[in-house]
Amino acid sequence: MLASGWALATSPIVAGPEGGSFALAGKASYWVEPGRTLTVGEVEARAAGLPWSLRQPGQQDDLDGKALWIRFEAEVRGSKPWFLVVGSSGIDRVQFFRHDAGGAWVSEEAGDTVPVSRWPVPGHLPTFELAPGGDTPSTYWVRIEHNRVDFAADLGLQSQSSLLAMREREQFLMGGYFGVAALLAFVALASALAYRDRNFTAYAMYLVLFSLGQAAYLGLGAQYLWDSWLEWNAVSTFLLPGLSTVAALWFVQVVTEPARFSRLLDRMVWVLMLATLLAVLVDTWLPSRTLFGVRLVLTIGAVVLIALLIGLVWIKGNDPGIRLIALGFVPVLVMSLFPVARGLGLIPNSVLTRYGLAIGAAFEMPILFHALSLRSRRRREAQLRASALPHTDALTGLADRSTLLQHMDAAAARGRSQKHSFALLLVKLANHDAIAGEFGRETMERALVVAASHLRRAATDIDLAARVGEHEFVLLLEGPTTAEAATARAQQVVASGLRPAPALPGGLTLRLQVAMALLPDRQASAAETLEWALAALAAMRPDSRKQIRPINF
Image 1 (cartoon, helix red, strand yellow):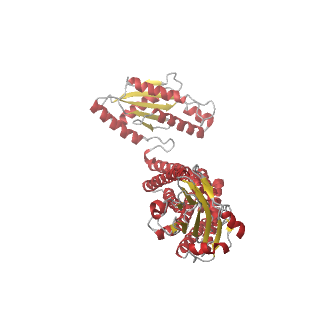
Image 2 (cartoon, rainbow, N blue to C red):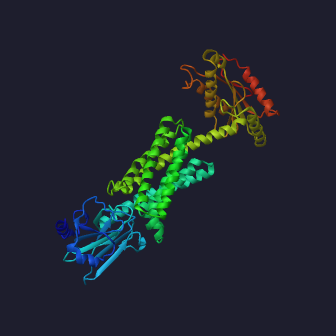
Image 3 (tube, rainbow, N blue to C red):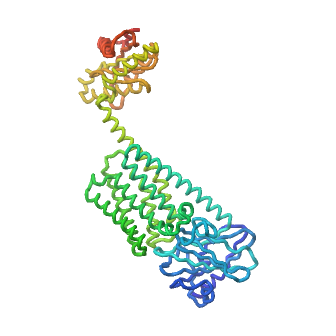
């Protein structure tokens, strides 16, 4: 390999003014130094006798305690700058060497050992500018240190226009992604505080830790959030993604509630959570390739367990929204396989290993937030219905008689002081007995619920619908009302009952009769007025052809 690797490496890459990009795989030679003691001058002096090889696409190298040396030649033609880009963030140390015009060494450095603001070309990927255009090719040396995970980043040359286009595209996509994540996390936290909803609490924590983990993994945290915190930067790349795995397990445990199906499964989730958290903390305190491997195995276990929980609730879950929640986890579960496989050294770096989790999360976040919102709304509605039971009819959910009387008293007081009328529409299900005799009590109760729904649709925001008897209802029109408006509303109620309803047997319609009164028209209490109006409604014969009767106009 010595001859071929060295010979091919000395064939210069021509970087012309037309721009573009070149991969260094197949165009650069490399050598892994067993220790980390040699300087670039010493490597150059011994170069001809070292076992150089040609760097291959997708190549991975174990650099624990070692240094990777890469050598290539390039000739920049024209005045436009060209750059060397190392296609991975979170690299411990990258050094870039070349000779200046006088033969002295020019040295530049990037990676976790240097704040991003002091990199030669700040960004989330180590980037170095090649020597300006000249008549002869220049020789470049790259030295890389990287522990715990095999180094598998692609190295390439990019023109200034190509590099700027790539960065603008990444900044646009990542800005949108992290902006949406921050917004959803804020809304989820606000919902958790407002409604005391444990699901939103777990979701907010998961979103925050997952987003911070992605920022650390992609190098955006070091670029924008903790540029000068070198120790934290080196730790965060491994710590935050691990904590996001624990948060994901907790979130799944909260929303799927595995204890409903199996106590053993619930305990497995807690054990795996604690084991993963312990492994992450120990690996942070005593970093090693072995502990990182243990973390990856636990992460695989977490993925498998999450998939099991999702499958279980998909099959056995009786929550109407649980399948939508389960569906929301699928994109991240699938995409998480790529960085895990990369960490185990099974696949080289690629777009999916770098951005796979972010892509999956971009699909996951809105689905999960929508599903949790639906679940929270259903639970709040159930709580509101339960709290309203003392003031509502249990079957139809309409207001009860006492609530109606309070509203009538208030409406009468406003009407007298402001000298305007309000209307009372008393509605009766005239074919109530016929429905019960032909179809039974269950269908009769459904008919009452359907009748109540017709009254709700006929009511505006300021009106009140109530149930005041076995098959009698009242629609209180509280605002200033005329006889014509009350009649139109009564016609709407009668017509709605004649339309077929899916909840009732085919061909069955509701015969709704309405008695109307404009109030206040006499000095009487609300209870007396209601009894007077109910008596007028009871006087209407069920078989009467006239279904709307004005009482006092």
